[in-house]
Amino acid sequence: MSSSPCVAHVALLPSAGMGHLTPFLRLAAMLCHHHCYVTLITPKPTVSNAESNLLSKFFSAFPQVNQLNLHLLPSSSHTANADPFFLQFDAIRRSCHLLHPLLSSLSPPLSSFVYDMTLISPVLPVATAIGVPHYILFTSSASMFCFYSYFPKAAESISDGDGIDIPGFSSVSKSSLPPQLLDRDGIYRKIFLEDSPKVTKLHGVFLNTFEEVESKTLKALNAGEVVKDMPPVHALGPFVPCYEFEGLGERGESLKWLDKQPNGSVIYVCFGSRIALKSNQIREIGDGLVRSGFRFLWVVKGNKVDKEDEEKGLEGVLGIELVEKITKDNKGLVVKEWLDQRQILDHSAVGGFFSHCGWNSVMEAAFYGVPILGWPLLGDQKINAEFVVSNGGFGIWKKDWGWEGERLVRGEEIGDAIKELMSNESLITKAEQVKMAARKAIGVGGGSETNLQKITEQWKKSQ
Ligand code: UDP
Ligand code: UDP
Image (tube, rainbow, N blue to C red):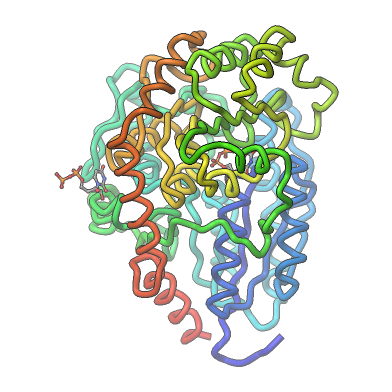
């Protein structure tokens, strides 16, 4: 490792789940390409196999990245029934004090520290004691960041009010509030309320978004309209799926199947890395896909965490009758395994994406220009779906479907919505425009690329 004064040394600390890990690894790759020396702190053990697999691939592709294991203290028992990813947020938070000796002895000394949005309170004292500029990577949209930073001001009134009016932004209706925030004893709400008022103590906030689609929101945040004394908020996205560690991938069965389908004819269905719908809802989706008459590639998830499951095969989840219907028509492919979404969205046969609107998925769809049928199921996803429909303009969202489990959405409704998405030429045009804007933002001289260039230059100068 060079100890040249011009090399910036950046430490990165992601939190649990692919939705947090993936953007951190993509940012790490970008920083390597900007000639920074990177230390990646890895909380151990990970929750899912998907996370440990991705980490192995990352460290093989980037052997120059310094890995620091953060051995987690066990989670507290009173939250034993909570979501495993939230429990891991909590475990990482309670282990952050272990970071001080790890980070203060690094050589060359750190120029900056970038950590996950769910770790502000416990990391602040560590970063302050080391005396290093520190930033969060907020792994959702600028819109969600507005809501996040303003929320504590409105928290007490949300149970009786209609929603939240955010100065400089728009309002977030009561039905779009992340449902976990309404659970007064839940980990998600606790972290939100404890951390959000501390955003003003950060040196900056990084977002996986780009000016062209969230310009007004970014302007309002940076003008201090949402929260006074807001530190600089930098749009650095969309984070591009990184071939070096996400691999060129083997061309598995799904890609071979896609190769045989006409251009733009397939709807790809995937609700991210951590949502497992109830089996009656899964069957309605299958029914809807068959009814739509379109070709489909459907990733079914039987369990929240990929470690637990695996004994139940496809027939066990879908039922023999539905599997027979799907195979009879030969129009669809259903898989119950991790697919490389990047390769799917990049395939010319894919013409639509039925998605839960996880922010990484939204940015990936923007980057590859694929229109979205959004079904937000939890957390920030309705705020993201609103972005897809209003800012991006490259998708549709049936608001009356509700959150996960709010009601059973019937196959007929799903089939109709898929037909609506796949037959709408203007969505294809809009998605193509968003794709162009996304590529411009991260290209040479683009807004996001310039932002990253400026920040890394600043770190290098201060070394
Ligand atoms: N993903 C994937 N294959 C899958 C499911 C998910 O590659 O079968 C990736 C997807 O491309 C995205 C991430 O996992 O980068 C999921 O993040 P997102 O924010 O979309 O949703 P979350 O999983 O956090 O709900
Ligand atoms: N925009 C934003 N946040 C929003 C709404 C819009 O950042 O909540 C940005 C986004 O970049 C969009 C642009 O403002 O492309 C224009 O938005 P709008 O639909 O309001 O069009 P206008 O009539 O202002 O041109």
